Length: 387
Image (cartoon, rainbow, N blue to C red; front, side, top):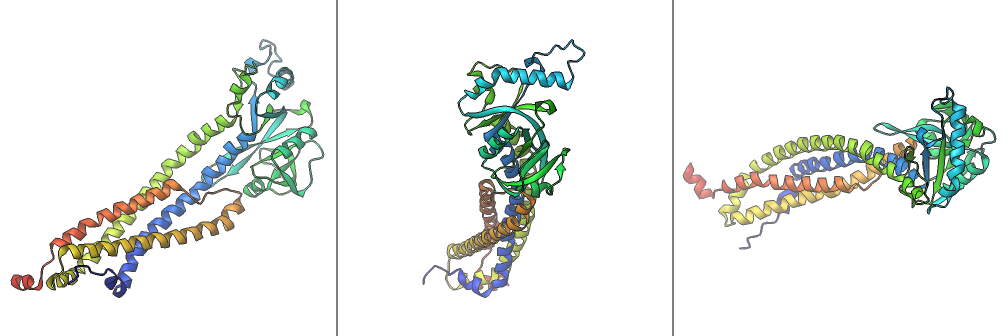
C-alpha cells in the first residue's frame, strides 16, 4: 500500500475549517501591508520634498559672519542693511558658483513657504520668489507647465503645482499659508512639489537666499563651491545632502519606530488567533489519524500529509492576500492618496520580507501541536486495550 496520503481529501470535505485558517493568515498580510502602505505616503511624500526637489534646486542662507556687517552699528540688524550685505556678497561669488560643475544658474530669491501635510506630520516647501527672467528659468528647469489660471504678472503673485494645491486645499486667488500677501494665480503641472513667483525686486526681499539651480549631480553644495575657492563657513546650505539627512533622521527614523509597534501588535494578535484555530483544527482530527494508523499508514506518512495541508493553506492565504492588498492599494491611491496630493509606493520590500518571515515562523510554531498530536496517535486495537 502506498504510504502517501492526499492532503486534498480533508481540504475538500472541510472547506469551512480550512477557510477559517486561510482567512486568519490572509488578514495578517492584508492589515500589515496596507498599514505600511498608508504610512509610506509620509516617507514617499517627504522624500519628494526633501530629496527630489533638493536635487535640482538648492539654497544658501548667508550667515552673519560671512557678510561684511558692522555688528557694532545700531543699524546692523535692520533688514535694509542685511539685504544690502547679502546682495554685495552674492555679487562677489555668483560667477564662481556658476562655474561649479553641475550648477546651471544662480540668483537671489525671496523664499516663501507652504506646507505639505501627510498621514503623519507635515513639512515645509520653499517657494522661491524672484524676477520674471529667473522665474521662467525655474519653471523650465523644473519642467513645469501652466494648466490653469495665468502666469504671475506682478509682484507677490505665484504659481503652484497641482499636488500642493490639492494637499493644502488651495484655490486660485488664495494667499500662501505662511504669507497671505502672496497670491496664487496659476496652477502648474510638475513632477515635483514646486511653486515660484514674482517678488517686488531686491528691495522687497525679507528672506533673501541664494537659489542655485543644479542638474541633479550636486550633492554637497558647500564642497562644490569650495573647489572654486568660495568659503562660506558660517552659512547654511540647503542641498541634497541635507535633504537626505533630514529625511533619514527626522522622517524615516521616527516612522520606523511607529511601524515597528504596529507590525508587532498585529503579529501578536494574529499569531494567537492562528494558534488557537490550529490547535482546535488538530484536536478534532485525532480520530481520523488514528484510523489512518490502524489501516497501516505510518506516523511519518500522516505527518507529511498534515504538512502538505498546511503548505496549501499558507500559500493560498499568501496569494489571496496579495491580490486583495493590491486591489485595496490601487483603490486607495486613486480615491484618497492622489486626491490629497500625496505620493505612495506599492512595493515595500522590508514589509514583504517581514511578512514572509512571520509566515515562516508561524509555520514552524504550528509544528509543535502537530508533533504533539502525532505522538498521541494510537491504532484502534491500542485504543480498545486502553478501554
